Image (tube, rainbow, N blue to C red; front, side, top):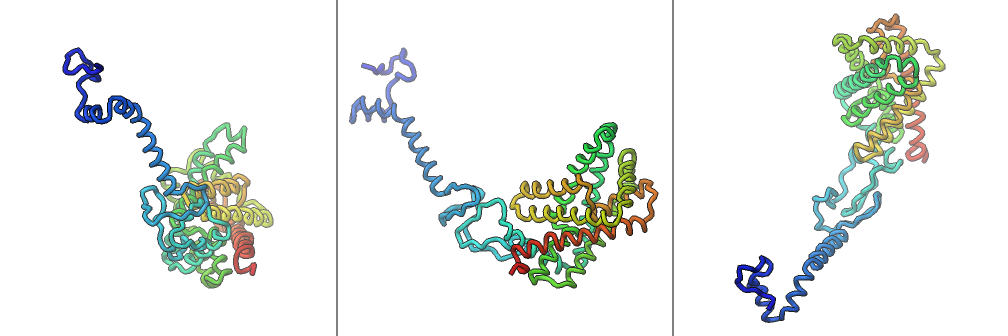
Length: 366
C-alpha cells in the first residue's frame, strides 16, 4: 500500500490522508484523487485567466482618445469617471464636445476648436471679473513673474567664465528657467496682461464680452502686474538678492532693452506674445498637469532664447536693473521699453492669436 498509516517513519506528505481525501478514495478511487491533485494549479490558472478576461471585457480597454460605453454598474475605483449626465458648461469645460450620458472622453488633449471655445469662455470670465479680484490676481501673478525672473538671473548670472566663453549657454539657462512663472500663473487662476490680450478679445469676437469690459480687463491687469513686479524687485533689493552676478546681468539686460530702436522692439514684442499666447493655448488644450507643463515650457523658452520682448517680464527685469545700478531713468524705461512692448504684445494677442483662431473656429470665420 502507498499509505503508511500512523507510522512515525512517514514524512508529512505520506501521513494518514484527511477525511476529504479518504472519502475521495472510497467513492472515486485513488486515480481520480491523483488527477485532482495534479490539476489544481491548472484550475487556479483557469479561474484567474477567466476573471481577468471578464474584467477586461467590462472595462473595455481601448486606445487613448476612443470613446467607450461603460456599464451602469461600473464604479470609480479604477480612476475613470462615473457615467453621468453631461456637466454644465463653465469656464473650465466650455467648448468641450458634449457627450451623451454614459460616454467618457478619454483623450488627453482637446481639439483646437474646443480649445478656442474654452479660451473664449475664459476670456469672458476674466472680462466680467470684479475689478478688485482682477487687481489682486494680477498683483500675485506679477510676483510669480518676479520669482521666475530672479531665479533666471540667479543661475544664468553666476555661470562665471562659461557665460563669457559660451554666451548661448547663459541665454539657454535663462530661457530654461523662466517658464516657471506661466506654469504658476495659469494653474492658479492668475491674471497676466499678455494672456488677456488674447483671451478677452476672443470673448469679444464671440459676443461674450464688450469692448469696455476688454479695456477694463487690460488696464486693471497691467496695473496689477506692474505693482507685483516692481514690488518683488524692491523686495529682492531689500533682501540683498541683487548682488554679484545677479546684479551684473540685471544691469546689462536693462541697458540693452532700453536701447532697442522703436521698429525693432515692436517686432520683437509681437513675436514674443505670439509665443506666449500659444503657450496659453496649448496649456488650455492639455487636460493634465504634465501636458500643461510641456505646452507652457517650450514656447516660453523659445521667446526668451530668441531675445524677444515681454512687457510683464520687463516690469520686473528693468526695475531690478535700475535698483542694481543701471544708469537709466524711470521715464526712459517706460517710454523706450514698457509702452512699445505693451503695444506690440497687444497686437500679437489680439490679431495673431485671437482674431486668427476666431476666423478658423469662431465667429469671424462665419
